[in-house]
Length: 369
Image: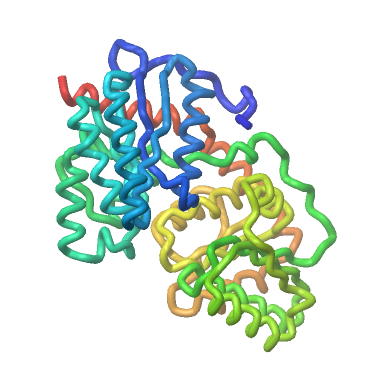
């Protein structure tokens, strides 16, 4: 599925005088998540909006490396080596230390390398001194940095001598292909979609629901995802204690189309995560005309400030979220959601992000001349 042609024209220019020959490197399909979605969307976007470019996606399988995972990662590296003559540019996406090793590998294969960090201030890549120093040294082998959002370089340490370019991220294709569902006369509709955990804000979602119930504010909430047994049991306990079984339901994780539909059917995404630097689910919610409530993480703040929604304080996020919702008229909330969706689809259109990536690659090539 691709955005309609009306979303933007196709760009034919390229870094340097020759057509782009680009390999996108990153992600672990055996552990799918936000990074994997980003890389897949990048591939689709380049094929749609830079049709003269030769683009391929190579996963790293670097997440959760153990004996079996190491074998997968080595196979991915060998696949790149086998294609060394097919590309001139590498766009490497780094979410862990093992994945960073693909930067010097791409350099050794003779490619110009742009690297994009997919981690935040709470990651081990940033908080552990020796890991941070090693990661900086490895990433410093690249020719340029492609940032996910303006201000990302203020959240994490990055090689000081590399040029930096804000590229952005890709909306799901569903955001362009299907119009959001019209507002209904239903009560306030909340959604939380994540791997259930305290750090991801799953329990805070239930605290917010309990506050709404005590205040007599009508609502319906869906929690979509999976979690460890202990977390799921804690979620069930909280629902039972607050007598919310008729208002809060749990749903197993959905595919991309299912998530997109669920977001379109909600008014507010509650994503009070303390660990996500740049959560794609927040961007997907905005594109579906659903306002997000987030904690003040740098990437989430960037999305909310650009498009709309609410960022809580860090001290009492559930209470802050409740106060914001309680002060909103439901019709006003839905109108703001539609306006936020329009801004998101304009700001994060595929052609715009492809153009930004090509500009960053062009700058990296020129730096070598």
